[in-house]
Length: 252
Image 1 (cartoon, helix red, strand yellow):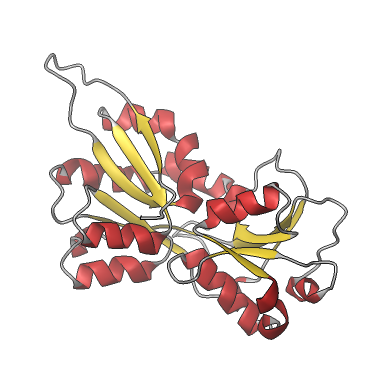
Image 2 (cartoon, rainbow, N blue to C red):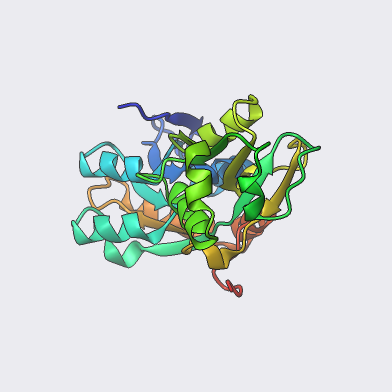
């Protein structure tokens, strides 16, 4: 389907004597991969069963759910795809929860490239800019909104290179194929080379990481527990460390 899907299996056998328990399948946006990997040990301990993460662009993951692909929990990088699937009867409405709010940054792997704001993207030395595909990736939609709101869209549009999701956009910049990437703050870690600056959240719509249980899940109780685990203080602390604004914080 042209979707870059990363499967990460966290294996843990239940100490109840029988065979291995059924795995919980979580479809999650690519921007959440770093914090969810950091939470792997907590997930193992709390869930007591295997968890399989299917990462990708939210719109493509939503299409998979619509097509009946195996999934117990669906997480989108914005509320839109969750609301759409709820309206279609694919997700249970009472399970919907906002886990955190994401943020956009401009990032260049070149530490010598000066970046002070979004208008710098018009400069001639910045020739190529990667964003996630706005047709199905919320961070790509937000990047487009920010460029339009800042009045630089017409100048910058010819420079844009689209990745299938934020991971691919990050990889384009890492490989030197673009000069700047507009990506989630969660992908910038302490050892990430180059330099980055945040974009004002007033330039784009909320990137609310929104989760819900798939109505046809065979493990609805475990799916609900997983969402509550992401809302626990320990998980929220990790999400904050990766640059997310938490639901109980001021999001202005």
